[in-house]
Image 1 (cartoon, protein in one colour):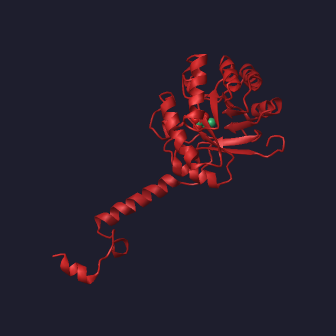
Image 2 (cartoon, rainbow, N blue to C red):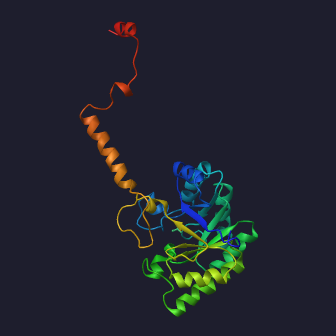
Image 3 (spheres, rainbow, N blue to C red):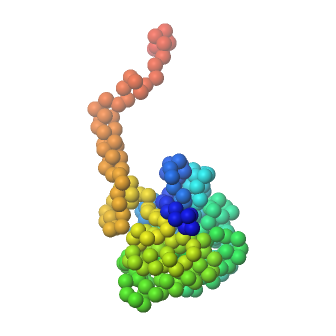
Length: 265
Ligand code: KIV
């Protein structure tokens, strides 16, 4: 798609029904992101997410989206723990959960792990820039690569990941110009989130774009719906109608023959 200048559209999904909707739409890849920790499980970061959580949610997504490439995130510490365990964990996401590929955050020492996974036959997507699993080390959820030194680090890490064998790289929260340079430097596609319009593809957290997440909305998110409001309205209307005896009405109830009614008492 990069060679043909066709932009790659990726979205997150964490469950069967949303995966089934994405599978029917013009979406090229689904990411079962470890953002599920915040979006689905109510944690305040992605750090508590386990490999078991990832397997559980990836299985549901794979069942819902048989026609779409499914990429599963390697959660915090599942890669750094050891070379062997990293490959083992990645293999579980492919073998037990049915993912087509895994995504790994970071560059530097992570590249060795990526190489091992690729050699073991596991397709790997990289992830650079703001890598939420390193939020403590990065000092918060901040735009990365803003000065020359850190921008060069992102470019070098992208080259190293490509060398290690990744098939694509997510670029998160970096200046648009830096993303453009990385995109023209590497042969593999870049997929941006908060990285401007010059990447080969884009990804967003689905719940952000449909307006299901509460609280702060990052600058790079565009809301295409306000489902939180719609859901709250639907639920409130249901509660009101049950309170008032409006629902269930005759239309939503089952009847029996008059003869049978007579015999019930
Ligand atoms: O976990 C996730 O959803 C991600 C995307 C934000 C790229 O990694």
